Image 1 (cartoon, rainbow, N blue to C red):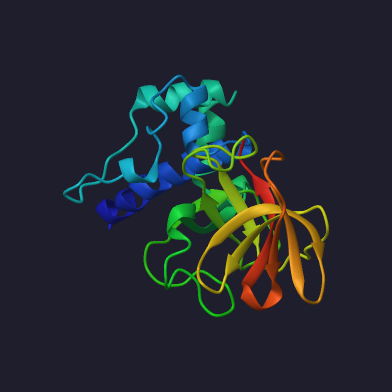
Image 2: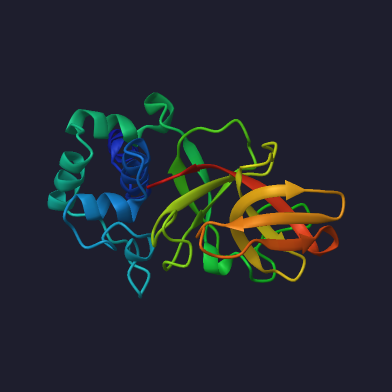
Amino acid sequence: MVRQAKAQRMLTHDQIWAALDRLAARAGLSPSGLAKRAGLDPTTFNRSKRVTADGRERWPSTESIAKALAAADASIDSFAKLIDDDRAGAGRSVPLLGFAQAGTSGAFDEAGLPSGKGWGEIALPATEDSHAFALEISGDALAPVYRDGDIVLVSPGAPVRKGDRVVVRSKAGEMTVAMLKRRTAKTLELQPLDASLAERTMAIGDVGWIMRIVWASQ
């Protein structure tokens, strides 16, 4: 019984990484953004680095945690509290998928909610929408607003209004991030995040779903 009790108090691989995700979120950053600010390789805290190619758990080093805490202006005591999601009150875990993978077949169900394999999890600021999910931006196609490694939190239940930044998925699976300029009974008028690009008009019949971005790491 004593051994069992001790085992239950041991920190797990998932708890440590989740705490790092929450630390980044509290600082308004993605995990890669936190790594950059800490002077580490931008991929240090990426999800792909948390498990080796042969399936073994990879733990963050003490040095990388210390640098992350300094970059986020946080103490080791606050990090310990982040390990306990309930006590930390730092948000909750939501499904996470790379933006490039979000257009693949099976990534969403008919209602536009996360479905199928490939989804991970990330701890982000609290949202009232229990169906919220996150997308990780890859590349600089959405610059200057969103850059490689940024995380956007998407809320299926949030009302979408003129001027909102939105994610639009066509029935063919194409994913678009833009500002909603106008919506009519027949069309969506979208302004690309790069203001130098021309506006785009989509027929409502071609739209699978449109959802509002409610938070983004920067």
